[in-house]
Image (cartoon, rainbow, N blue to C red; front, side):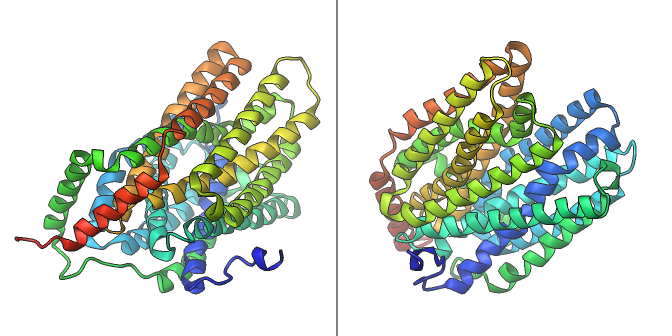
Length: 441
């Protein structure tokens, strides 16, 4: 049992897998501190200083950045594959995100325009970097250990999140930095954390570039557009990937909604600021446990069966929250239990979904297919959050939680139509066809 808990045991390339996972650990400073804990509140209470307007500004700015990602992800992925530029894009977008994150410290009272001007490119770079990082999965893992390596990266991310939570909460308590107007040093800290964590992947990761002289940027752009057209034209040959992406989009509506509304939902159940912080800590711990469990068992169970298990956990959790929303003043300890289901679902669904895409991806189209995956996930963030918020505002918490449950139920039904073996065979056929293709022949 102890041997199975050693994450890098028997891997042929532990150094490369560790470096790849370090990027997941590093960018948690943006995921957790910027997107979840600090910047939304800072913009709302300091940069705008009006709660109603602050909500509107933040949601608009966030949606704008995500729409840019949705529109450009497939092209950026295809461009990276054609140019052999995945690593350069990964590190380049990371450095840009680090510099922009540090610049958040320049945002002062009333500076919501500057906040928007900095956040939109920062979040864009972060999200594109996430796509590039995921596209390295088939290069640092084999088909036999794809799920395990994916889980290692996910788990290292949650380790980073836990360390960040401890350091930031400790800083708030020890240095009296609780009020939002005193959070500027945390933005610089987030940037430094991200920058230092990128050193290992920048030095160690190796990209398998296309053979021959890299094409010019102009030619590469045309090749990228041609490859996108080919992907659309040959969609029937990747039917299982498309089926999975449809299922993923539907259940990702729920995942993205939970990420955006977890604090608000907890607040609706009577959690104060201290309990909210502890609740986020609990989610992070159980999400890490979910990622570890996935890494231990996914390669044996297979990615689809693993996803079915965790989607059932999500459905049970959402139904529990629906039940808690019906009576007045429900016991809070039941919501704490439901929170464990949320954490397990976040940790398990994320890594299993990434491994499923890797299973269906030909080796010469990793960035392109993971760009489609990223576009699907980010698009779900826009649609899911907006629809949940509208239903919650107009029909109340119970109706919005029923909608949330529906996302996972429908997503599970669509997932059951995915044939993993057929998708894997399609990817292998595409690889063989690409390997035998001779330009100009």
